[in-house]
Image (cartoon, rainbow, N blue to C red; front, side, top):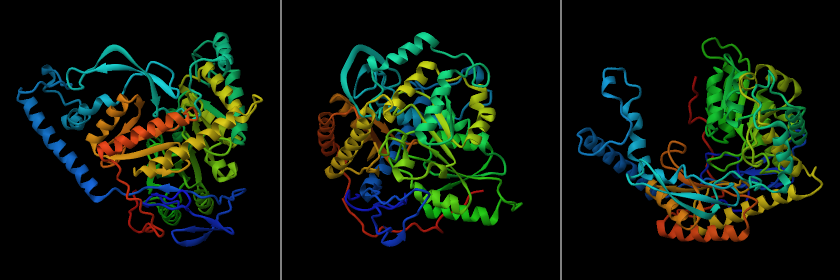
Length: 549
């Protein structure tokens, strides 16, 4: 595991990453001294600690063995269902449609009906309160092994919420600080009933966009009603055929969908690996487009600020240096990082001290730190003006709800201190303290924890599917709500629990959770960390991967 007092490398392929300590303007990376990049006003020389420890060999063997046994039993149960011995609760096509071309292949649902269904009770749990530091969960039971559920009418009260993206604790039930949201609701109503290009642009939208631009220190910004669509509907407006997208292998589905819809050529680089990215950039400049060898119209690098499944932070100074060197464009998705990292919550650009002018497209969502909904695109004024005309979301999607816009304005003013208080800054500082405390305690207990020590997204590796289910069920009995994640959202053998730390969590809450996790780690034997700290981790071999056309 990474040493909190050590240094780090920006290389997602490493299994035990140590940070780069800067001394006299130089940074130690992988035992090699490299000069710190100067990007505009950037002078990032703070410890950058990330950890991606490998599991012991026997854990991986038993994990794959578990999936293998599950697959064999799946085939056996499918045989019993087809023979009529076991009742089939899955969706099947009607007898009259047997001669039709199948709507879906039966095997496509194999994993769902034979593995996911056995542990399905750990997902889609309905809550019946605001997603604050604690929430209420509706109790449900199943009589047919998770194919269907019924509610008992009871409510599990005051469950500690370790799963919601409520980083600053601002997604809470109504209090007097939300009076402006109530006033906007009474004045404007809930819906807009039109798109931004028609009759759906309100003064509240303009006020919010000006505030977002000021918050990010850029020329202009545009807001959208849905965070996912902010990526998927705007990337196709920025690039198209004849353009090249270089995408991190762990990018969010919204970025992946937007890239595919654009029609541009997509090539993938290893997560946070600058050697992998530079090789793709160099080859793109040298060889150009396949077959014709013409120069690419645009080269766009797609990255995230904080990666929501890994808890890692983008190596922004290195990426900015590469994008300048090869004259590429940089698009950064700050869905999880805006409001949660940086001294004043302004995201990874502030975290690293990067000049905002060095980033071509800022994207973020209001669903995490702001306790609202929607997203934004920000940057130069000519970029935003272009999107106001050509964005599919601006042309076809309904505008952001006025009360939602006011909630974002209220929170952003709180973070910026424009409300005349320091409450926003205090929440950001509290989140940072809680994050470091929670991560360090987990590491000391012996768990394998992924990601950056400053990231409030904390993945704890469980690996085996049976342990994933037991982990979530036992914690709910202790009134702790967690999110567990497995394939296909993660690699097959890297199932995990994902904790989201909040500024609203008290030290007592975190200690309660940590005490339960300590006991659960011993009960389920998931304390896999060997606490090895390699001073010279292996460098990624830049020749060990192939380009994709």
